[in-house]
Length: 419
Image (cartoon, rainbow, N blue to C red; front, side, top):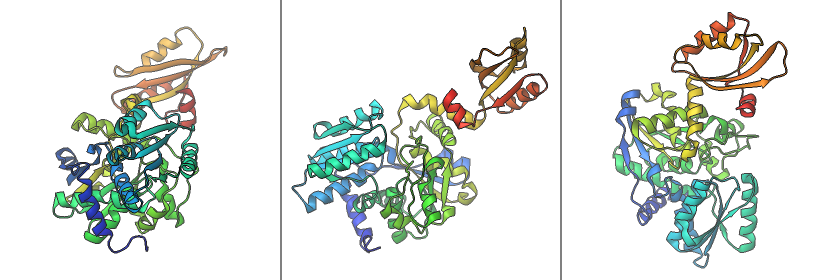
């Protein structure tokens, strides 16, 4: 592709050097816990430790620097983002002393709005427009045209891609000998295409494994179709990587990735990984930032005995989401389930049911769904236990009685409506 010239390597190196005016290289840390668990030499490239707690600052810096170099009079930059890109743009606007207008959906959590405003200070204006991101993006682009600003894409921009390649530059400088495997998340493709482009040139023997959230696998869909396609719907839980359509420019680089090197991570399992890294290692990761660690168990046979670098892409985790993370982690681990129980309307029926529960079974939800039934009543039950095998015992006891039940734990339509 003509836009990715032979000097991409040199430009990535130069960009990395210029980034030192903003922040020192993020650490590459050996992780004993993961290394022992998976029988490999595992290192974490801690992008969650940039000033804005994600790698997005890199691409925003490089893109803004190059625009101002070509057009010094340009002092208005516009973006649409509800998360890490907004914070990166805000930080860089203050660094260069330019104006930034950041469009965010009305539904953006106050924590993210506050952090974006903190990073940008008086240099930025935040506009809350649209219930959904598509409306926010449209408003931002329309404003950009009328106000004469420069729109900063979160990933589908050559200068952004070049800026994100600095993660690979630092990694090689810190580790010395290229690792055998690099595992990194992919959303719109800015980070993955930048790192792939650089590593293909300087360390072609290094294997790349890309990770997508299962509910937002836009690269997987594009590889199957041979071109970027728009997913009809996505699960927005992994908000830093759940993208409905891979970038056009980024796919030009990623279209050569072998499908077996793109791994999907289930959202509920990512919650287990977030909890695990917080409780065991004291590392706070957002869902997208945990992707590269989460899939280690999927590729355990491929990485055994090898040197592996996992890119932890961000740590902007809103702790108000912790109850949801715990809930999803428990459901994935099989220690929390939801049932609709059809209970006979007779004296002692409730006592009979409670007697079936084991000593480690705890009722966390009990709600009558239908109170007009003459002979039976439906109950929404939430049960939490210490071992998934306890549910096997409970269901065997229920099957031996006149109670009928339905496990709705994995029925998304019912659980979203009822729970």
